[in-house]
Image (cartoon, rainbow, N blue to C red; front, side, top):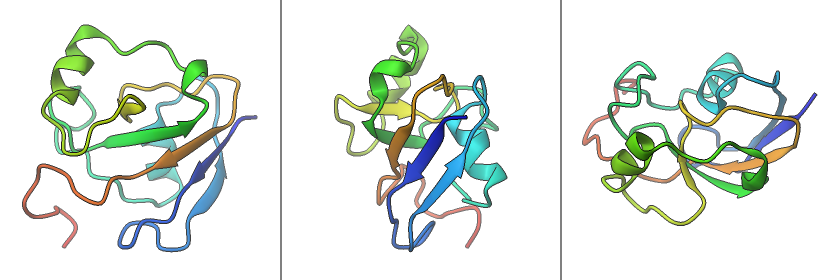
Length: 112
């Protein structure tokens, strides 16, 4: 079973975390199942950028982003070549290292 290593995030996951993920589940769903409350304002329908993450290791194991996902990533804060929308990136058979960006385009988090 692949592992997702979540790098520390000051507010969402201060100590970082390593979790197991079933192949075929989205990174967003895996994080939420582990009680890592990543934002997902569009309810995981690829209609916003609040679940944007950086895949620091293992990005080659993921399917390529769709054109729609790429269009939304163009609007996300702090995008780099390893950026993905976690609601669209499905875990495959390799371990991943994920960094949650410090900011999203939302001015106020739904969980504050």
